[in-house]
Image (cartoon, rainbow, N blue to C red; front, top):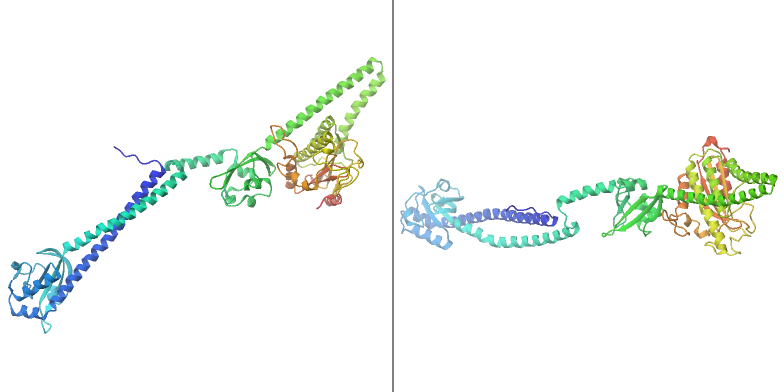
Length: 590
């Protein structure tokens, strides 16, 4: 049966680590046994040398060797056997200068020539070696035998049985294997624990699948049209996909390892990514884009933030709201025209023809005069068309839309769409505030007591003077628009007779997602318009602020430097400084 290779990381890592641990233990044991065998051989040869030196140091042995002949019962054989028995050596051989044995454990070998070369000890040198003789393989030593006058009269050869050396080596193996087995068991248990932890972390995925999952993850993250930003437990960015880099204007390479506060401007987007703001489908504005952010915590303490671009949807929603407002205005005008036609028909039936002609001229002249007045003061067609449309919507809602006498904007706007966005959002908010205040009366969301700083008959701190002739008690709700050019700077100001904005909220109302209004229609949320206004103003290097209006209400002022072409402006080059002076005089801090 063919063995199947384990597929899971747990089994693969466990098998690999067990094999590696076993191999390391076998290698370590082998590396330990090799020097151990050499050490035992050296010890045996040293022991043999010591016995040979001790035997050769006996002066009687040299005299007996010279005085007698090789005899199995002679004194040399007796002394050699006595020493061999006492030292448990394999043999002790005493030879003369011819290499003839005078002693041997086997008496039959006495008188015969030794089986190995005796020239070196007979020449006066000591010899240690592992060799094979008539008694088998042994660790042996040979030393010269000298008489009383120092002359070499023979040699002594001592052998230690090599089987005893090998036996000592083999005897040490069981103990060594026990230690190795214990170490291997500990290693296997540690490997098992590591593998189980790895299995929990990898959810039992196979090695081959990890590469595929990584490739799929990279393709998915960088291919989807939704921004993804992953942060670790310390709040540092560890992943930014291509769409998130585009939406946030980041460089994915330089953003990694840094916190959102370090790579993004302070605001709601950085707060959402850092986790300081929580919730679902949070609205944020980044670089003029409307984003919907969701932050999901991960089990390791980090978080993943998804970003969806809702800029086009927001614009479509606002266009839909504008279209709906125009439809309502047209419906109201339809009723108004029907009443006018009924009046005209009655005049005709009564024969009052001159009255009928005058009535038609008056009605047509009023509408034409209003449109012509706007076109004369605002030369850009998009802005003038916006004001005409908003005037119809304001009339249908019972609010008068006034154009300030100071309004004069030449047809020199660099990007009319940005000014349309700013002015449209300001007008929408002003009309909503005035209409809601008109319905709610003094109990509106920002209503102040009649003796407070926003009372109709007083001018509170930071009030905007000169925004309209109405400084006494309000008789008609209105929104007043002022557009003017000061050098290459466009100044937009929208005043209303709504409830006004308390000083404590004058910065918060420009934050993304902040609104006092009820939830908007299904296609978009609240709290985006004023945030877009401020972002556009900051992109131009200008600012957007809100102050109190004399007589009650609010004044929104937006300054957009370089929004007008320099060669098309109606004012001189010092107009920008004049604009700053006017804003300072009007209560706008520099």
